[in-house]
Image 1 (cartoon, rainbow, N blue to C red):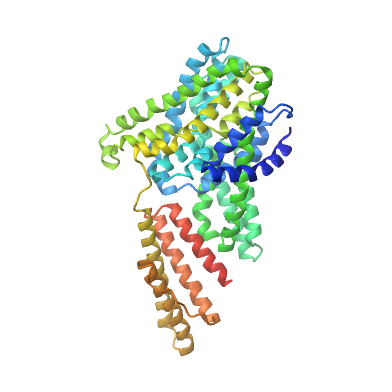
Image 2: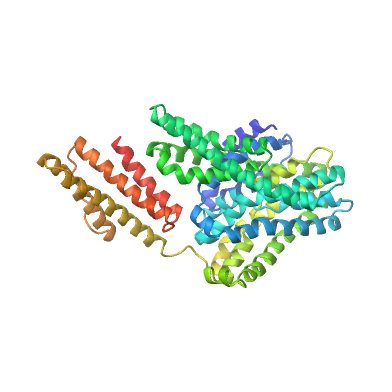
Length: 521
């Protein structure tokens, strides 16, 4: 079964599984991987062969770009220390732990192959985390740390992975070379991502300046951006994965001033559907990879080793999170700025180490003839299944046990933000009123002012009336309303850039403003 055929089947399966996911109130990655696994046991189906190039190039860039786009940069930056502790330190420790245990469980497994396995299963997956967290009310900081870890840790793991593969071929390994390579790959990946974001913005602005762009053209550029970032990163031998994530973060931060409301509204619909289909494809593919082992008779003999390594990566994460969080607070400056978090928050971070697409792609990408290649692929599948399905399904009861939930003040905070935005729009109307003497124009402004005052009153008291004058609007009224909406947008952007509101709330408010402004065009 080839990749295009599997993609078509994923489209068909996505409909039924989306309904099932909604019916069962489960994160859709879990439903898809379980469905793929069950299909692996159905007799008579053709074998599934997925090229790693197809995953790394066709599937991974848009998924990572989307994850970067929704990353809250302010929270990401403020939590960079714990993110890097997980993305670098934990990946290295997990790789060492797996490399130490795997040869004992799999007789004949060489040290280089064991290191390759460790590097493959050590990075958590930002895509799996984002899709799983969408169903739960989890504190924003925990979401930011886990998703940020998933965006960054691939660079660490893939550097170790590359050296392990090279060592298996030549029996040579240099710790100094690996460290230098990691710095070059990571820093280079960030630089390429920023450069690609700048290029895309530059082209978009030039097209808009010459009236050559619209929502379709802008979104075609954005769809091409992750592929361009990945290919550029790979071409200059830095982290293409990190390049894609950084490009997504950078373009997301600039999208409010670069793109029109129509572009953002069209892009939201296009990307939501596209990302869902790609997730359906990849998580079905993860489950179907099991088919080869079911028919070869290797499933049950290798299952204990896979389960043991899955348990190991979960245990290592717990053993890392708590001591490192405590040790960090021994530094006075860190302790003052960031006191020790609750044990429940650390436990949740320890429990949310889900693996996914990058691990699968790295395992499949092992060259033919690599020692114990098929065994590594199977163990990787088991680790993905256990961490994604096992930890994902238990997330809800764990949240109840730990009594962790999203900050209760978020709703009130968003209400205050909307009020500040409306106040900014009302102020802009007052400024225009002071510039105009014509009584007919002033009547249009008075009507718009009354609409804003009614909306403010309704937000402060939902029982308040929201009756508006439905008479036809004039050009002056339309112009004034557009100016007021832009004042609202600028006010919300100022709060977002200052770190006073989360990106998630900003995007919700921006969506409403985009709808209102699109109505005026």
